[in-house]
Length: 463
Image (cartoon, rainbow, N blue to C red):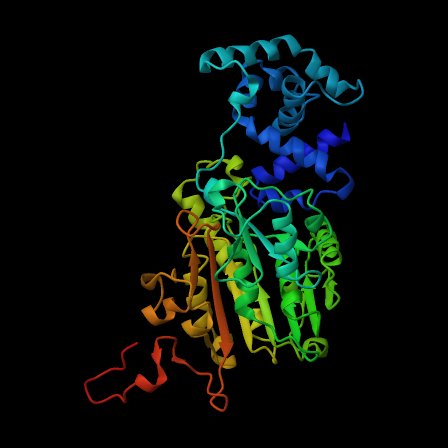
């Protein structure tokens, strides 16, 4: 029965919007992860139907002493009605469900009649329309495998570079991200030997942007921080870009997610990563251990509003009034701003990439704008990296009306889940400027320095 309690607790975390389905499932104990994940996902597919059945059968009311939560009722009723029975010993909780077996089956049949379906599978929630159009992205882990080797392996299994992804056997090399391949959306790799051995990593294209934009040096004197590292996709990407050289400090404060991180970097063959089970905000920037850190990646908690992958559509779009949403976004933005300002206090840092999987300007442009106006940015001489250094071939940029100038907005990257064949995403890059190095492309992040005219009487500098 512990299996069902773990699945119910996972559903509670999802209801509490504590993360994406993929992210939360990755924190489950590895020995039970596959089984628990399958039950959670299948329960979510039928959640609305199961909820109606449970309510009509008055299960929660009549068994409130034994069935302590709706999530527990959902997973148990799912297995009773849709999966061949409850796989647990005859304890009091199971007996509480079985007492209502006839009524529960009856309510299921009523729903099928009302909806005009015969098979249970026809009651499942259909996939997210936008998610169905997102290719399956596979990043070649160059620590273990070359892109040429991976392509040869996949073509030997029937995939073709010449074929369209629509055929189901197409394979394409991405035009923006090195070592990234794309396949048809329905393609699966979880049992593929190249995935199970860490030679390739399943990672959305937009999620690859932060590491590529940060572009840490691949040398023995390179020191980098991944401030919120779990589950480890971006960490392993950074390690690959660094060619396993230098040192990559990977912070993760949550103990379960930290275990996931350590498993991921081990599987990916990351030898230069030092995983640290600690809150990045608790680290003293003046600690001599981090004195040589020059690059920091920040991908902090966010609303996840840009995620439309193959699982998270199952969470549905629960009603949230504008006031509640505004409060939640403001709370997240406050935390995100705190993370950036903390990163700016590391004395050796030259480059900071801040990213979210959010579509809201509150978490994106507004956080960047507030960061640029902060005392930390002014003391550290941080400005936005120019557009030409932030994936210049990517067309969708920041929203001009949400920034102080179109030039600043052009330095930002946005991904639209409906139009860019990715999940929704946002990336920004801060650089420490120096007159000696000639790295001050903007004055107040608005116009090129060389175009600023001296203020004359009655005039003002255009910002």
